[in-house]
Length: 81
Image (tube, rainbow, N blue to C red):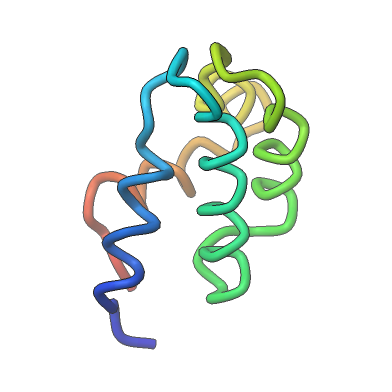
């Protein structure tokens, strides 16, 4: 599946810094987008769901703890396939 302008928009939400108001929910919505497009696993999506109400939490920390940080890194560092 080719990368789209919508993917760029959602990536910006996924990259929101911890602490931004409603950032947890925005990151979760973006994670759902990438899950639907098979770019983020169900396990990684679950991390974003768990942290949706935690604006100050960095999802990468929990993703790393569960061995899923590579998925986030692949998206945020531009390895779009």
